[in-house]
Amino acid sequence: MSAQVQGFHPASFLSAQTAQLRDSLSGKRAIAAISGGIDSTIAAFLAKQALGDSLTPVLIDTGFMRLDEPESVKAALSRPPLNLRVRLVKASGRFLSSVRDETTAEEKRRKFRETFYQVLRDEAQRDGCEYVVQGTIAPDWIETQGGIKTQHNVLAQVGIDPLATYGFKIIEPLADLYKDQVRSLGKHIELPLELADRQPFPGPGLLVRCIGSATKAKLQMLKAVTRIVERKLAPMHSDQYFAAVIENRYVEGPLAKSIREVSGLALALPPGELHVDVFQDRVTGVKGDERSYGMLVGVRLQEDSRETYGWLPDKLRILQSRIVEKFAETTRVAFLVKEKKGGHPLSVLVRAVSTRDFMTAAVTPLPWKTLKDISVEVLKTTNVSKVFYDITPKPPATIEFE
Amino acid sequence: MFVPVVYVKGQYNHLIARTLQDLGVESRLLPSTTTIEQLHAMGADGLLMGGGPQRVRTMSDLTEELAAAARLIKSVDIPLLCICVTHQLLATVYGGRTDAAGKPEFGPVEVSVMDEGRILERLKPSFTAWESHNDEVVLPPPGFSVLASSEGCKVQAMAHEKLDLFGVQFHPEVSHTSRGAEVFRNFLRAVSK
Image (cartoon, rainbow over the protein chains, first blue to last red):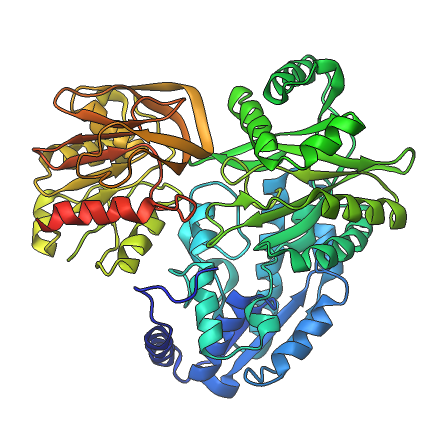
């Protein structure tokens, strides 16, 4: 990750933004919407500098956070240098019921956004707050405005007036920055590393890693898998890494066969050595600056070939690009690491990428042994039946699956 | 030095401004309806145009946004670097042709440099660039020289050296195009000459 950049000066940015916030918020009360991530933490820090006790930091427990996450975030933010007294709002029932009937990525994201701002509206009304400070950064509004995906923390940039719709004004002190710049602010104010280097976690959290419908059972399994995958990948020097789950339901028809032929050519293997599954639930990507909501292709090789190709990330990269460039309806390709007979018809997708600013991302060439270790533990301790590794860069994929 | 960026809703337009700022140049996003007179009044020394989701086929069926960008391209008299969809627009404005790519490119692609010109100085023989395009320039415009190609795309870079007009299909502004900053430095040299 790049450290200091020539054109961006943390000290002058912080003092200019604090002065501007003092100016626009003087004598007012505000809520800071926080998640524990670096962006909302820095935005809340700036607002606290400007407002002192007139600022209420609010953390919403959406039910889509990881095991024990809300409590540990609340504790971490209460310690120096932040000393934020966080109000934890429990709203998991409200969120889960708002997305209960949704199966497509954008509907899930829009419902999440709606509930998110309704909860904030209730909190703001209770305290008589006119303002909400949030940690929206450049990729959030760029992806939302470009129609790639609806980020939960973008309203005005897509023509939704927060005052008319929710009764408060929104302040986004970091709206022109990228993740690496926000991290340099964190280092500058000497945030503890657990916060400054914390891996990004999407606002809608595990909701968008539960591909398709988000049932309670699926979410519970994803929480268990997430714990294993994050622990195993933490030492691997990837900028972002996580797990997602998808149901083993496949598209019928000739597409899988055509993809299998192209895959065989790309890997120089007879088609009989490969098996291709095209999943029914769709996944998000970006091709030529346009949203691509297409098919996820799962490629399974026979065990001995899998062992060979697992160690050859460049070959897998060619496999991925041949498939996605040839078949316009496909968006991402995942490579089977391990499977077990029986189990719940659910697959785990492991994702690990290197990225500076989350605008582009390269697949991290994880050692095959690491992927196998993860898969063995996931298959042993949870009831899922397959583990894949996503081998698609951004573009044509996005980092998250939905 | 002030080098603004025309925003046409591409994913990386804002990153172009950031890259220029990182190189010590003042930059910000402007709408494509900005005129050359307004650019002069702001003191612009050069101009960048980014990518976007629109299609370029003929001059008569452009989106309003790209039609405005095309007017600006025709009237510009300061050095201009166009990226991705506006590279295709630059080619089309000057009599070339854009069409669906025989092989769309997404992610890392090897770009071979035939002729460095000014914009690809020191980038021979080849470099890895990141791409994201469904369309491409299929016929370069008269007066422009093709500087670089990839396996799937013939016109990865083109230039009209006399008019200070440059176009690249790849994205020099994304961090994964590791030598992208050199393309901007080369452009800034053309601006400051």
